[in-house]
Image (tube, rainbow, N blue to C red):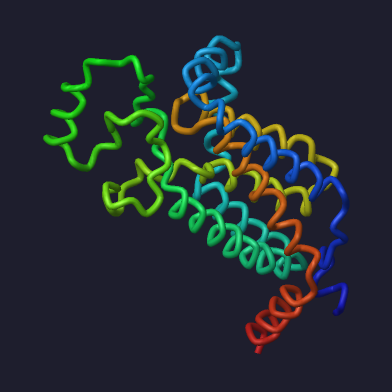
Length: 245
């Protein structure tokens, strides 16, 4: 590997790159049994903080146009970092494939489209009527019905059943991983933006706190793990050599 072709990779997988994601993933799984208690209160608490402006701005951090713009700008203005962009695209593929597969397997109903009822709830007829009239809705009268997975009652191709893990969150932390390679001294800033994006998803009732914790864990660990491999660098350099011909 020639330094002039790929000055950034492969990188050593240091302990913060796997320990913090591991702890976030374990916390995510441990909070799932308490989802009913946390889901109604966390969004209210977050909206009371004087940070709504930050949440709204950070939400754009996970936008596709943001990632595309950064990749194009880096490719154009920093030619020696083109191999870095190609390695990042490989990491993007593996991270997205992992998270989207997990979304499909879990089939978790989003908070804004789910009703959490206790066993004492008697009047469920209006819910049953609504479900019959709107079969694509995520509303269900049964208690604890958050995880539909491959259930036959789950509508196909519906974004209401892909809450776990959070797509915006893993995208934000994935982009933070790239920016931490390009501008390592600002790693803390990229992680703060990604965290604010994750909290916005909870405040907006788009995700449970467990969803964003798992999204953050996967979005940070998988790219950093791939950044430590040698074959993505070799593939990237081979592509660049063919492009120069």
